Length: 205
Image 1: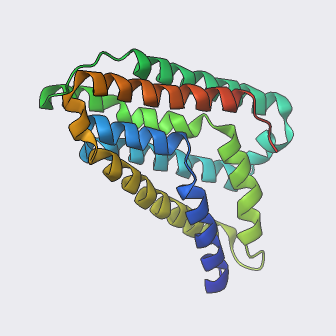
Image 2: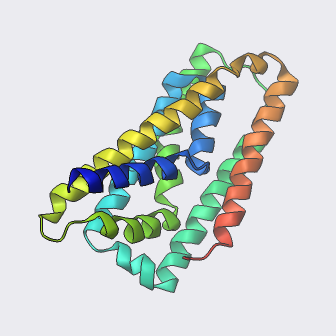
């Protein structure tokens, strides 16, 4: 991959990362509820899913979701159901102030939450499958280029998601008020349910 091609891909990765989506909502929710150190687990899950998706595309399996309506719809509905389930759980969360012990217990599932938020989104794989070939130099070995793209995407996304989480962490003082905590739970719960509904009604285009 030439430097000019990499810079073009870097710009695309930045634009993709800063676009608000379920990953940003998960990062902000964890940051606001548990603090940045716990939000890092969500971010780690998001990046792990991104690596898996890029590997799937590199192996050529992404073409299946790109061409098979049945496969796309199956993953799409699974992802939509998961986002809606997260939203309902957050909406119903009791307005309890989180102490250090509760943070440790609750944070255990954050990595898996981040992983599944990205992994069950077929549009992400389809997007990667449509995007990455444009930045592949066919005259050079492909796997090193996919590694470069993976490092670039994960690096950029980690920085952006950390920004979202740190911004949300600054708002944690609101959580001292039970009413504010309840509003925060319902706000993020509504975002996840909305994202799930939008995903369920989306197409590959």
